[in-house]
Length: 239
Image (cartoon, rainbow, N blue to C red; front, top):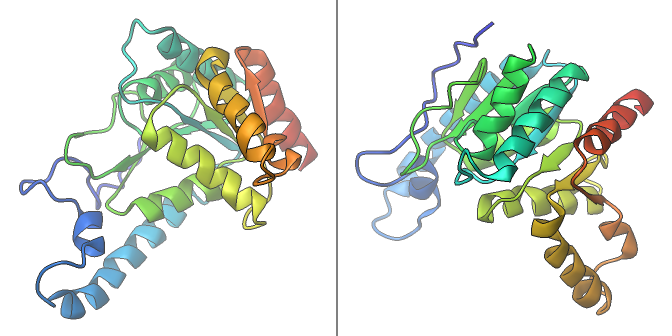
């Protein structure tokens, strides 16, 4: 069933600005004093619509990865395989709804007969959600969208990506570390892509006592799709 939540449509804006930018930019005249209270109502509406549409989603796993992943990249095939395996294991697959790895995960889930969720965001350079989403939600505010990922996902599978992917990964780790969320499995798919980062975290951050061993224990690094999905299944079945 295709969701019809179209009240908040992402995509390029005519003036090159985004709603987040207008909210967070403190430069210029003091008009924000009068407009920000009204923005609160828009923010509230996004939360209400998101909670309403996802409340009965059921077990779900968020899959992150680069929007720049080309179709012929091994990471695209891996994302598609992950999406399909999660759907067959009874999970809804939640992505950012964009191209690249997100599209691949949605495609895999949809072709396996599963629920394929796309949480779109208003950006200057991206337009519609990919064609493999059957539950589309569109947001103007990043922080509202991030809440939906965390609230409705029982785990994260993170494929090779850039800044946005890193942002989602470290936000989840920070929320778990600080007890803001119940800790859930975080799997880094693509050993070659991630091993340098994890090694640096161990050799520098851990060695300098800026993180604990338990922080690194949150992460599972693998190229095995079955292993990744099994971790999600075990977490679901033990909850």
